[in-house]
Image (cartoon, rainbow, N blue to C red; front, side):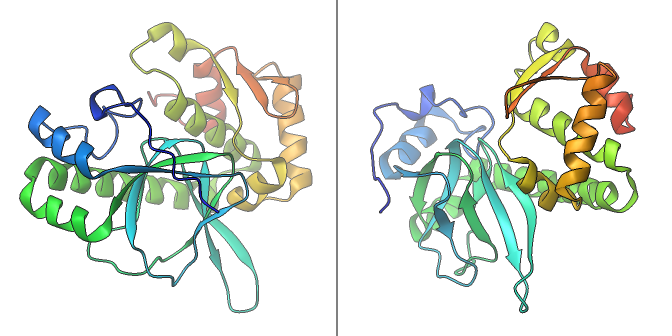
Length: 242
């Protein structure tokens, strides 16, 4: 059963405050959001939504990682997206879930009843504008991922995945942090293979090669250190990306 654990933090001190749906809100708008939000926590492996189910809420990921998955009629499963802190689940005006969403790690969501949130979007231009910005960013990311899956080599795919996690979990305002990084991978090798369209053997082999070439250092099952982020960008095939 979901653990409905109200947190005492107000919106102004939220760790995703400047990246989430409320990023552009004024103080009075934050007060409205604060008054209607509630927190919900899911254990690793727990389903957050099933495709086709009625969505009674929308939410921002506050902590943790979840996957979006599509299941075909013959039982094949494809991971079509990752949800990381500040990502949004659900859409105003859409009553049912499109994908299965599953918690990979423990996930904490900041939730809003869908009807209340739809009313808020109509009355709060800053929230509506932020939703548009996030939707366009998501569209760009989907196009980038289509290119990755269709054209990049296995090595480039692994490097691109590591850069995605680095970009989303590193403080971009810290130039030193952007030169090197230490990550805790949110996915197992098996889950990564599904997400990247590779076999688990290929994923493990490419990690070993990147380690042997000094591009990354591996620490345990999930720890990865990137000594030189620029070098990893070159491995991903986009050396000029920031």
